[in-house]
Length: 399
Image 1 (cartoon, rainbow, N blue to C red):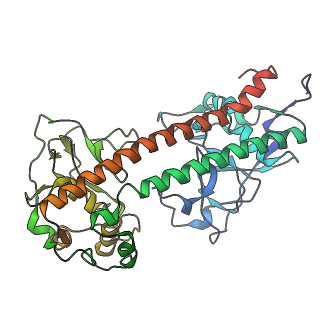
Image 2 (image 1 turned 135 degrees about the horizontal axis):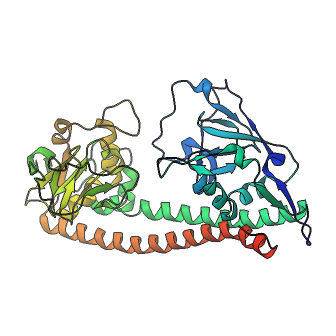
Image 3 (image 1 turned 180 degrees about the vertical axis):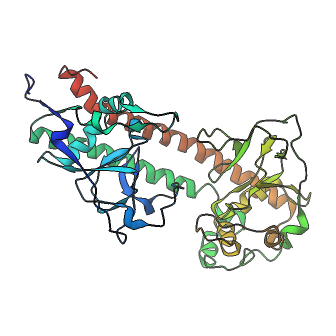
């Protein structure tokens, strides 16, 4: 079926057919992301889903295959793969049956026009995980222009993807500057480069600074929440430190929060399994945190904002990785005993104040730039998703 301008309408089953090839445990693990489509699992650090023990049961994906996360297709978690690898048995894998441009199929099947349809044919009890109904997917109409037009549209959308990737690289670079290691340790950039391979957080610090150990100046707080929470549930972000918990993925407080720990301004809060990822920070808020976290009172010998930037600096993140233990590389628990023995540089108090205030200013400037980068990235993603939908609307195709 063709429109007046030459677009044809075909059922999904004529473009893709379900496929399931297993028995390739040595292939690279792939994953499906809403914003990116099919990517290498190793390319992301924010995917906490662990691979199963039996990789032989995982499904083979080849370039040109369509992969869907059946519980999140309605959110846009699907994509045509440019990679070879394996994906979870819980995914759907489809083989392409036509010579249509796979890049165009990737973009059109991820457009808002089709994502709305996936939502309409997904069902389930859990609100954030509705299963796609594959038999209803087969009858979905897909609208396609001629091959040359497909390529032109795909080329344009790839340019948008490159702009998004550039913004993400900029965001990463900004994040790496949020804590200036050289400033924290009173080092010049040249000195900082010379101690990049330091084995102790004290290597290379100025001679006039004192040295101490964590256990001498940071004291675990025993204050519990009780029946009347003093503020909101807090979490510890590797990017921002202690902040209000806004997660909606089940990582919320239990109904009984009386055993949770209280955190008050100028206390240090720490996720002992995440120190090597920046999972600690000095709070500016009053609230409560998971009982798995710890809160510490800070000795008056230390300026709290200096402490905040010190322990979140790359040198300490690397150090915490060396003293942590555990079988999971992304979750290395640091014991209280090991933390107490951690060496800590202690500049004169006024120097601590200067360093802490300086880095607060740098962090605030970077946060403002990050907000602008994030807003522009979100706008580009929105425009990318709407482009094909808008073209279809111009063709007279309703959602």
